[in-house]
Amino acid sequence: MNTSRYWSGLILALLITGAAVGLAILSNKAHAGPAEDQKGLEIAQEIDRRDLGFGDSKTEMEMILTNRTGESSTRKLRLETLEVPDSEEGDKSLTIFDHPRDIKGTAFLSFTKILEPDDQWLYLPALKRVKRISSANKSGPFVGSEFAYEDLTSFEVAKYSYTWLRDEPCGEMDCFVIERIPQYERSGYSKQIAWVDAAEYRIVKVDFYDRKDTLLKTLESSEWQQYLDQYWRPHRMHMVNHQTGKETTLTFQPYQFREGVNEANFNQSRLARLR
Image (cartoon, rainbow, N blue to C red; front, side):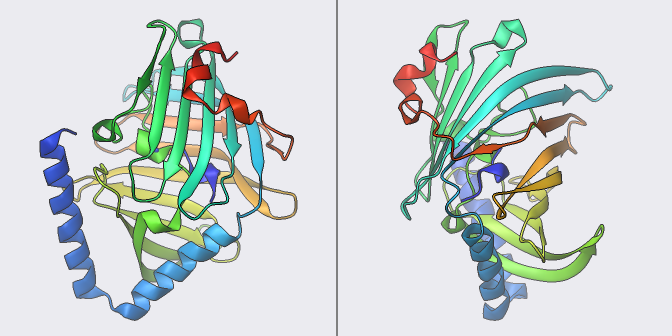
C-alpha cells in the first residue's frame, strides 16, 4: 500500500462514469486476453507487496502551482501516513498546510477504502469548520491543484482492474506499461495508463483519461530515494493538465519512517486543533 502514489459529480456524473467504465472494460476485453489481464494484476500485486510493512512515515513538502501563462505560487505543507495492514481498508494520510498565511492550518484527512467511497475531510480555517468530501466531489481539484481528491489515496490493488499492454524503454529504465480501470464508483477517470519500472516496480508515469476517454493529465514521478533498504519514494511529482495547461509540482524533503506518528491526530474531530 504505497502512499507516495498517493497524492488523488452529481447523478449525471455517476451515470457518465458508469457508462465510461463499462465501455472501457468492454473495449479492453476485446483487445486483451486472460494472460494480459493476469500479468497486469501480478505487476500490481508486486508493487503492493514491495511496500508492505513501512508502518508510518512523515515528510515536509512544497506544492508549486503554475497556470497556463507561467505564473506560479508556492505552498508548504506536511504529510503523515499511517499504514493499515488490513485487506478491507487502505492507509490513512494527514496533510497540514503551513504556508502561505491565508491557508495556514488547512488540514486534509484521508482514509482509503477499497471499493467503498474513501472517507475524506477538509478543515478550512477561514470557515472554522470541517467539510466532508462527498463521493460526488472526489474528482474535483484538491485546494486548487491539478491533483484530484481521488489521487490522494494510497495504492490498493483491488481498486482497479488491470491489463498488461506492452514492455518498452522509459528513459534509462525498462518499463511495464499497464492499463488500470477504476472499479470504485464516481471516479473522474475512465482509465489510467501506468509505466512501471520493471526492476524496482515503481510507478514512474501515469496518463489519466477523463470520462470521455480523452487524455486529461500526466503525472511523472522522479528523484527516487530508497529508505530502510526497501521502500522507494519519489522526491518530485509533476502533474500536467493537458486540457487547461496548468501544472502542479510536489517536491519532498527526506522521509522519516517508523518514528511513531500520533495516531490520535487521524481523526476528523481533531483537524481544527492541529498545528
